[in-house]
Amino acid sequence: MESEYDIVVVGSGTSGSTAAYMCREKGWRVAIIDSNPFGGTCALRGCDPKKVLIGFAEIIDSINNMEPNGVKAEGTVLEWKRMMQFKRSFTDMVPQNREKGFEKAGIDVFKGRSHFTGRNELTVGGKNLNARFFMIGAGAKPVPLKIPGAEYIKTSDYFLELDTLPERIVFVGGGYISFEFAHITRMAGAETIILHRSEHPLKKFDKDLVAGLLESMKEKGIDVRLNAPVVSVKKYNGYFIVEYTDRDSKKMVETDLVVHGAGRIPDISDMELDKANVECSDRGIKVNEFLQSVSNKRVYSAGDSADTPGMPLTPVASMEAGVASYNILNGNKIRPDYSGIPTVAFTLPPIASVGLNEAQALASGIEYELHSGDTSKWFTSRRVSLEHTGFKVLVDKKSEYVVGAHVFGYHADEIINIFALAIRNHIKASKLRNMVYSYPTASSDIGYMV
Figure 1 (tube, rainbow, N blue to C red):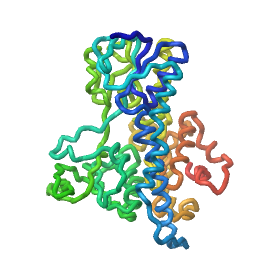
Figure 2 (cartoon, one colour):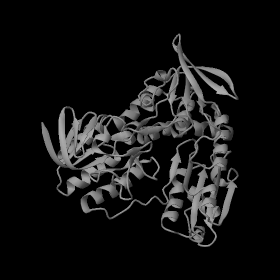
Figure 3 (cartoon, one colour):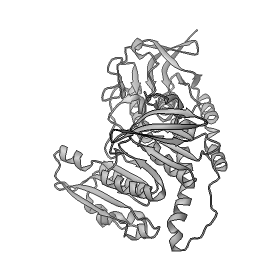
Figure 4 (cartoon, rainbow, N blue to C red):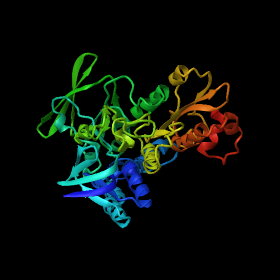
């Protein structure tokens, strides 16, 4: 049985949904496919539920920080089961609402894994779908860990559905997932360990600010072990033994749960893209500057499944999908703009980055002024008893444009957006310096950072 469409979209997350609705609004016949519940990673298994749980952790962290200054909240605890119930109030209805939205818009919905059978055809659930164009926004999945006992390592999806929090948790890998979840579990009372294979975790962030974050985590009781690659996981009498190396010697740690935080890869390995002559790399589908497959002009891709310079972030997926969809509808005319896109790890406090770091600026030949400092004595940090905060801002000496900003501290996740605005729109540092900010706010510190 076959069906004809103008476009078939694979993935119902940010990039897939954007493409489906944009093309449908132009009257195109659209089908959308997903093997997971409709809604994508961010809404169901990533950004949104994670931020809900971080909100709980922030409360406990604030109480702990302010206890020496007059806060008495003895017996304050996080009730994990009720936390998860609250989290589900944000996620449970997403698949149903997303599916109803597609159907109301006249978009045909298909569930299951899809596989290409030719340059202009794929199959899903035993049904063949032919189309003039395909948009691949399939997202990402945890990178396979090729170690003995890898089957015992649970994904972040599993973690976000836990009804009971184990007493001891080990996170494998030192990226966003591990660092963010570690703050949640520690504030909820679990013994928390991160095992990271190299010397530098959170590689997208400034090393000096990450060092401050590591000090902060140590004081919170989060045990981060660097240069500690995991070599095996064994199950033993109801718990797990995680074996790792430390300075060429083997060490072990016992735990009740092992969570995968060692990175993700495009979720396209079983799509049989070769049958559609779609070239791929380890980073995803190879696309040109218009987000069109370099080897099959019918296929476009965006988000985590595309090999682009963009970071694997929801706002990037949305931006890329808008560009790809416009080009599908109108011919290849516009290109994605990756300048000034911020990224944040929602640790406690958050750490944020946008633009170039020092090494990148030097490699680009930019002569820059570095504005940096420890802000732990600034009012913004002292008011909430944060002892490890700081910033770095890079300003081009010739143009006076901000080319990079890195912030660790209270409301860094919001401050970074102003720096992103400056980078993306070529706003001079003097404009930020002379801006009249509301006070006292975290953003009013920007004038002193430039």
